[in-house]
Length: 323
Ligand code: PBG
Ligand code: ZN
Image 1 (cartoon, rainbow, N blue to C red):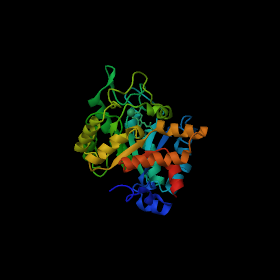
Image 2: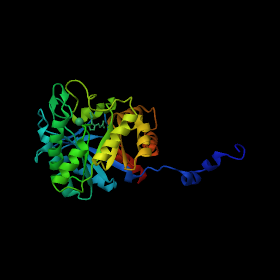
Image 3: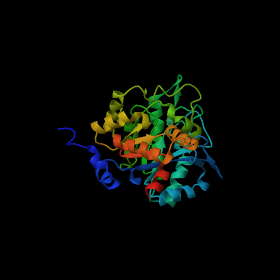
Image 4: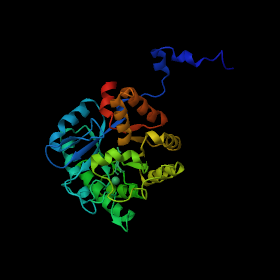
């Protein structure tokens, strides 16, 4: 029953038939654009390892936000760079913190733009770890208490969704209880459920000034060698109340995205991280690859693997191209 009856090439003959049988289409509806917002004035600094991506102070950010809105990108994911760091990252729950100011500014001026906040501590602590230190490691349960304060202040400032990225056990439950206790029952949680201890975060850490001062994150982020454990992390997060689960990084973890898609029915987000972005930009700059085509192929592969949502620094370029 094979050849010559069956000729798969018949359905590849021209672009019209290819369009008809195409299984995966990337759209602007899939995209979340990350933004780095720094406390201060007159700041618009390009991140050297991420061409096209900047850190902005709020007084410089309008052009960027207008572009995002005009391009019809549904959501932004906010990262803050505070003017003050300390042992515990107290800026994260201050009503005058950089993220709280940013949420208010954006929701006030661009009420239709959906604002998601990254919930973590590493950009706000002197030691650069994702929580409160105790005996040379991050103390899980003390960090949960501070996380509750952080999400409540984000919600009060007007955040539409919160996204915990610190990989603390029980963080989704703690956040759900804290939000519900303050009446924010309708704010969803997008959990960084399967977040790996990856070297692909390097450029982000330059951008957000969040490199750990000592050690690494392997006592809380997942071992890149583990696959089944991702399903366990996701299962726990869904039980605790996660509305959306995330895999991060994306490109080296397409098997994880696929596993989660096949085993659970919540929306799956993939984080196309800074190092993935930098590699494409660098090779593009050298003229070694067709950058635009590689971007589309890469992001399409994430959707094909099962992602519903892609968080990507390429969001604006992709939206421009799709139109
Ligand atoms: C902080 C955080 C990181 C990223 C998102 N949130 C870095 C890290 O865990 O060190 C990485 C994003 C990227 O590389 O684009 N918890
Ligand atoms: Zn962190």
